[in-house]
Image 1 (cartoon, rainbow, N blue to C red):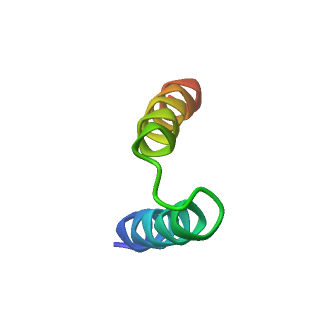
Image 2 (cartoon, rainbow, N blue to C red):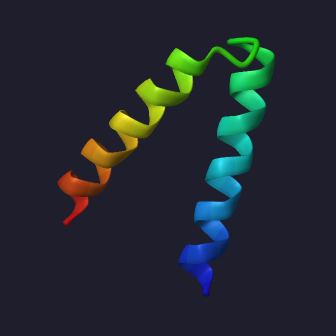
Length: 44
């Protein structure tokens, strides 16, 4: 439950950053999803 909440907050803040800083560039979205996968693999 807590992890789901954190993940939701992460996604929302990521969307917010994408909209404000990167003006919704699709490449940014792709980069962050790749970076996120790499981070998740490090944690395991």
